[in-house]
Length: 190
Figure 1 (tube, rainbow, N blue to C red):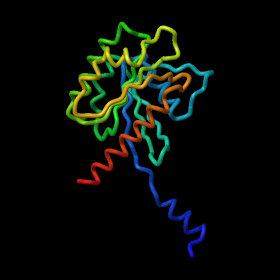
Figure 2 (figure 1 turned 60 degrees about the horizontal axis):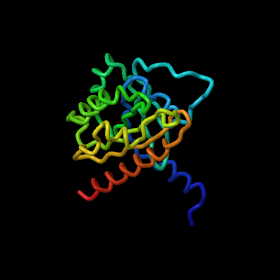
Figure 3 (figure 1 turned 135 degrees about the vertical axis):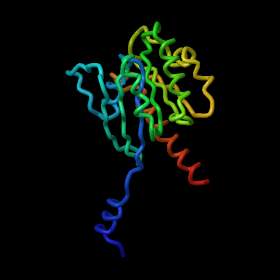
Figure 4 (figure 1 turned 90 degrees about the horizontal axis):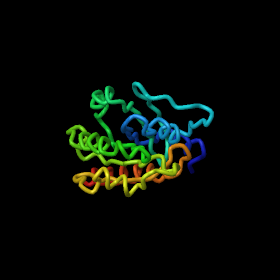
């Protein structure tokens, strides 16, 4: 009859499936605040400064170890994004829903990302961030502005959220985990 010690030893041997998540978007979209929310590291007393390089956090959830890569979104830094594409399981693109004048720029940047061979077929989650602010465009309006319906050969989702309050963030991350589980099932069938 197995004892508790044997059971715990077996559990220790089970490793979480690692998922590489790449958080991209224009500067000031809220990527770092979003990452802090996902990693449960928010501190209302601290102000988030622009990311000039990258931040990496690991979080365990739903049987996965999420490795979050938050890369700065300034125009000069975007040329280096490609260096982080390898082995990406899910692309998370963050949009500032209040900055409507930059939706066209966000659309062009996202289109370039989706056209890159290294990200071919990678599922994409678009967070329409800053939904807690009065003048924020709805997630549906952001999806239309980015022309998400034209995305083919990959699954995608638009998720309204507020990285500051956390509303909607968990829904998006649950979708990410479901997508990876589904992809794993499909690979196992082959």
